[in-house]
Amino acid sequence: MPDLVLAIDQGTTSSRAIIFDAAGAIRGVGQQELMQHYPAAGLVEHDADEILAGTRATIAAALAAADATAADIAAIGIANQRETTIVWDRDTGRPVARAIVWQDRRTAGQCSALKSAGAEAEVTARTGLLLDPYFSATKLAWILDNVTGARARAEAGRLAFGTVDSWLLWHLSGGRVHATDTTNAARTMLFNITTLDWDEELLRLFRIPRAVLPEVKPTDSLFAVTTRDSAAGGIAIRAVAGDQQAATIGQACFVPGMMKSTYGTGCFALINTGTARVASRHRLLTTVAYTIDGVTSYALEGSIFVAGAAVQWLRDGLGIIDDAAQSGQLAAAADPAQAVYLVPAFTGLGAPHWSPDARGALYGLTRNTGRAEIAHAALASVCYQTLDLYEAMRDDWQGAAQTVLRVDGGMVVSDVTMQMLADILDAPVDRPVVTETTALGVAWLAGYKAGARPDMAGFARDWSCDRRFQPALDAATRRRRIAGWRDAVRRTL
Image 1 (cartoon, helix red, strand yellow):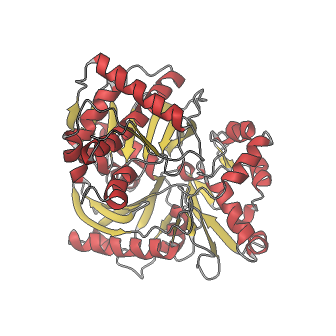
Image 2 (image 1 turned 180 degrees about the vertical axis):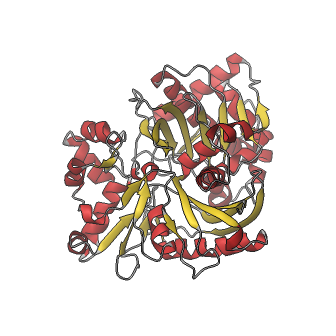
Image 3 (image 1 turned 90 degrees about the vertical axis):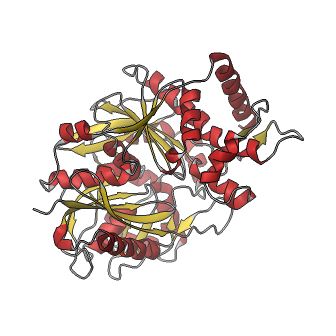
């Protein structure tokens, strides 16, 4: 049997394909950046055709880098940016409009109107989510209402809706498969996470015809076999998961109480609550963690809209760094006497505040504030936002004692940032040997289902820590800094 597994990791800023061997080592990588379209303030779009073309190109590049062919690949797993909404024509396979990205805020008014009408409690009871433009339902309704003829074509069954996983499955299978998994369906605000099916009441509330929806399958299903007109033809796609749930799997957070946080464009923290669906008192989300071996596990999730995007802002918006690595070096040189805070609400504030209309602000500027202090504030903002989630999760789920946080994503390569995170949390932070945990999660799961990888217990035993960051900040300084952060958030809100 082949022992290589191919993971497709389609994210907000790039499409990647990574090939892992049986030891979990990376054998080949292909990557392409994905263009962001900003047609107006608060609007964020992608070209769905570019997502598909980039995915195909990265698969070919990864195979070439690994000196492998389709015959060497045991299975494919797909991890994807969640909530991003695509509608396409079933006959042509072409999108009817640009994809509306999870960061997009164009439907904030519709969400506010539904809240005012008292709909949020019922939405939360059924989906575990809050009424927010972050999720797919109002994005889908916007496309149906604003693209000429789209609603009539959708009701006639001529259009298909999907998050990015469904879009890729459709095209990689030659249009034969219109499906998603429970983790992605759970982020649409149309899926009942108790019954694990599309919810008729929510379809009526958001005016979504059921004919456009994909079939929902477990995370570890045999989703499709790729068509043979590509470098990766004839391979079974055996795992699909939203990127944050994929990272939870890749961090082997299988035991209730285990917590991971991924630092990419945004930051997403999940704590596994097992088969118990836990309601949050702090406006966190209750979501599906995964459905594996016939069992659905749940999680509490907190979403931070701006994490790595704050570093991108330092580079592209302010021009004070040339590359991301410089941010940590610059922050390390900051004057510790200056209490400068960045509240990075560029597209609103996520959990636990959920304020889509909040906008970013810098506090504590003096004549002596310079590039180093602003860089420090940007990195610290990610740590403070993580603290807000960490404390809310521990309070919501009383089964969680002090939790070691497992971290992944692009930002975790910075020792400065990770030490800052441990200091702010006053808790250990574990960085794994393999930081590509999103891709690793679906690669392991696809390989497991193909018979080429160990079971969950075996995968958990194989997980290894590269470095543990222990808190080293004195308690008084920590309290003072946290108080300053919370005052800055209060002023922003």
